[in-house]
Each structure stands twice: as structure tokens, then as C-alpha cells.
Image (cartoon, rainbow, N blue to C red; front, side):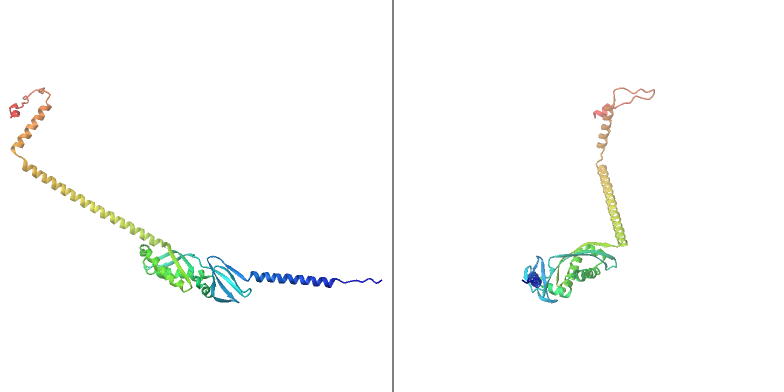
Length: 279
């Protein structure tokens, strides 16, 4: 009897090809499923790109369905962001001033698609930083170095107004601005120090002069008072007052006498007129 040999190889290849096809279909399905939605996180907006073109609307926070492999979502943060820089400018009196400025701003949520289309993601480097420098230089030139310190709040308000207008043109809103520090050249700082020393010396000299004038006036008034007192005393001196003073002097001498006559080798014994005392 003749033995039959069956070749199983073609059948095995068919099964293997079908398995691979199913795997590819499954992977494609999973890929489509994962690319058919996007989640926009809190504090962000999603800019939709459709075949590279920016759509005129943006996606709010949450989950959104998109066309897989056709649409792409670029997230942009719309929360408050901070930019800090140190700008060097010249004041009205041509003093070199280094100003440290801290700026808080945010992207306008409804206009993020326009910002992305015009500027892209590097809006801080391309727009915010240059705008801060330009605003600081423009406002600094309106004030002297001394006014920049004495009118700090006014300077800050002008910089804020100027910068706000510039950022608004690029779909950004300025929240606040803080001038954290003004730095001047060493020569100007030395001049300020010398000026303060001179003012202190002038004030001290003025106070000394006032003190001398007051002391002189006090001496004049004291002399006048003493002269007036002497004048009044002279008016009140009478013969009776003179006699009373003599009697008072003699009484003092009697109180001091110890009852002993002085020992002398010549001369007369001191004599006190008792009759005059009784009078």
C-alpha cells in the first residue's frame, strides 16, 4: 500500500499571516483609539492644528475628541507667569541706571491660537523680555536719577502702562510689575554720599548758629534782669535800711564772740556800743 505524505507548510504560513494581520489591525485600532482624544490640563488651553493649519478656536480644560493623525493639540499655559530681568538705561540727567524688574503676565485664553500662529511657544523670549527692556528704557529717560528713587511708584505705573500696551498687541495681559532694585554707578553713589554729608554739615552749622543766637539772647535777657534788679534795689535803699544792715552785722559779730577779750600787746580793747544795740 502506498503511503501518502501531506505537506502542512502552506497551511502554517496562512495561519501565521492571519495572526500578524490581526495583530497589526489591533495595534492600529489601539493607536487610533489613543489618538482620538486629548486632555487639556487645568490652567491651559489647547491650540488645534489640522494638517499643520491653526484652527480659529481653542480647547478648554478637559477631555476632547479629535481626528486621529489629522488633528494635533498644542497646550499653552494661561496661568500667571513671571518674567524677571535686569535692564540698563540712561536717566534724564544721563546717569547709567540698572533696573531689576519683575513682571507678572498671562496669555489671554480666548486668543491663544492667534498667539501661537503669530509667535509660537517662545513668546517670552521673543516678545515679553524685549518689551520689558524697551518700556524700562523709555520711562527711565523721562526722569532724573534722583526722581527715579523719590517717584518710584509713579515710575512703576508708567512702565506698567507702556508695557501693558505692548503685550496687548500680542494677545497677552499684564497683571503686575515690581521694580525690585535701582542701581547707579559708583561715581553717582559717591556724589550722593558727598551731598548728604554736605547737607548734614550745613544742618549742623545752622543748628549751632541757632544755639549761639539763643544763648546770646539768654545772656542779654539775664543781664537786663540783673540790671533791673540792681535798679530796683537802689530805689529801695533808705537811711533806715542802712542802719538796719549795720545792726544786723553787729548782732552777727556778738553771736560769734566767745566772751574772751583778745590778747594784744598794744592798742585798745575792742568796744561794742551796747546803747546803740538797744536803740
